[in-house]
Amino acid sequence: MNKRIYLSSPHMGGKEKQYIEEAFATNWIAPLGKNVNEFEKEMCLYTGRQHALALSSGTAAIHLGLRYLGVQQGDIVFCQSFTFIASCNPAVYLGANLVFIDSEKESWNMCPKALKKAYEKYPNPKAIIVVNLYGMPADYDKVIAIAKQKGTPILEDAAESLGSTYKGVHTGNFGDISVFSFNGNKIITTSGGGMAMVNDEKAKNKMLFWATQARESFPWYQHQEIGYNYRLSNICAGIGRGQLAVLDKRVEQKRAIFDRYKEAFSTIDEIEMMPEAPFSCSNRWLSCMTLKSGCKVSAMDIINMLEKNNIEARPIWKPMHTQPCFKDNDFICVEPSGSVSEDIFSRGLCLPSDTKMTMQEQDYVIELIKEMF
Ligand SMILES: Cc1ncc(COP(=O)(O)O)c(C=O)c1O
Figure 1: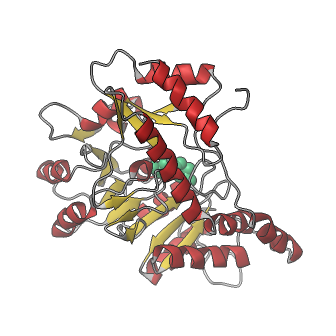
Figure 2: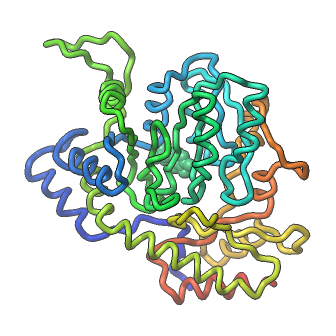
């Protein structure tokens, strides 16, 4: 096949251009306007959260969220190690010291036992960053119970999990502040963008203030605090509105892609697909698999073979505690056999999960992989 098969590329729903054209027609070519306001309202309606703040990226949303939670120079912040670096970079921007927490096998997300153990060494963290990896929600009942008992706020990094539910409730509802990303590879995109979700209007307004250069209400430009230029463009928000209209369809498609892999590989003993805990319904943003330990074929063998066939796959996120830039940060793990996240990283890969991929294209990917076993 000559046409490249992508990991997860933008998939327009059809209405995006209409919203963009409206922005042009009314000359709202700015980081404010009807699309921004409506996109925020529509995200609240979809997730059931009370307030939404449209921003230029998920990273910006995490930055504002952590700042709102009071994270400052020298504070300890707990963060799931198994994630993309954008989950924790904003804590570094604020001068905090990150302590990385290992994952549990069931959800691949923050291990409640490791979180509990982290408090023995660091009793007063300022915030906990919990991630919903590849769309899979963390086990929030357990994580929230620990955080509540200790009085630590949670920042839910739901960048990858829009459309997923935990015990029937949409992700984006489990953090004191929750964050989505609309980057180009996400389940829906605004080309680049993000959203902070909160229940407290005061929190939304404060983050909005910082996101628009912390301008005080004076007739002239008056500033008491330092802010950022983090608001989402009205053009990008128009793309987001069109995308949100087809989100449920995309979740269905992503889940069908995952199920087809699962079915096809069920006869290959060495392949295991990413689990789904009984309390979760994942959007299956990326279909992930692991190879049994001792398997002669490695994750990189499969990725390289697919690349030779013009198919994009990628390794699992490399845990943060193994990144050179975080070599001096502490890592808390409870598994006697070693780190769960390191183990999954060493045996895992993300398969093409593009919703524009045809059945024939997916069959082709499956056949190529099957041939290796
Ligand atoms: C887990 C996770 N957190 C945060 C982000 C940051 O989002 P953005 O790229 O919109 O800044 C991403 C995606 O890029 C992500 O996958």
